Amino acid sequence: MLLATTNPGKLRELRSLLGELPMELLSPADAGLTYEVQEDGASYLENARKKAEAGRRLSGLPTLADDSGLEVPLLDGRPGIESAYFAGPDHKGDSPALVRALLDALGEAARSSPPAFFRCAAVLALPDGRIFEGEGVLKGSIAAEPRGQHGFGFDPVFQLPDGRRLAELSTEEKNLLSHRARALNALEVHGAFDAALSAPGRR
Image 1 (cartoon, rainbow, N blue to C red):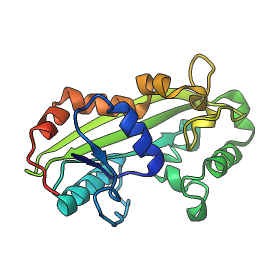
Image 2 (cartoon, rainbow, N blue to C red; image 1 turned 60 degrees about the vertical axis):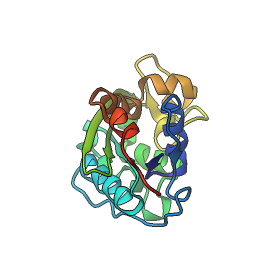
Image 3 (cartoon, one colour; image 1 turned 90 degrees about the vertical axis):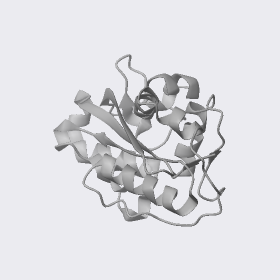
Image 4 (tube, rainbow, N blue to C red; image 1 turned 30 degrees about the vertical axis):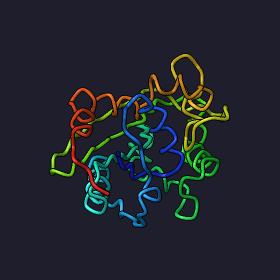
């Protein structure tokens, strides 16, 4: 079993991305855990590591965690690690509110499709103390108008080089190129999932 310390939207994506892995992917609730980790690290990697190590410590299971965000150079790299809270603490993860906040911050500059990056850091913490880390980046731009019914967060205004929004992609298409998919691929290259399969996890 593999514990994933993430929200329901990301958990669905992770289950899709890791569908061929011969391990059951559990949420904290599935594992009977209730806890919250303060994401106050200075980087995506620090936040992901904190969540992975907390999950491993509480469950005794191999634990996967990630942290990600949108970076817009025109906004000096914001929203960055504060992406989920960019519309304010009362709208954490609220996609329409996040999109509005981003477009408001860009103002007229949104019409010029400014460059943007989605960045994800993923960490797999094993019961024996080993830590595996991976990072993925997806390059694109910000569109002035949201489009698409899939994904979450800023996906409706994140525009790919071919003009499509990330929210217009099917799950299968997104899994081929997303920043999260690339971070998980980096973990796989480092042998993280093979190590998790052989780890003696406990409930």
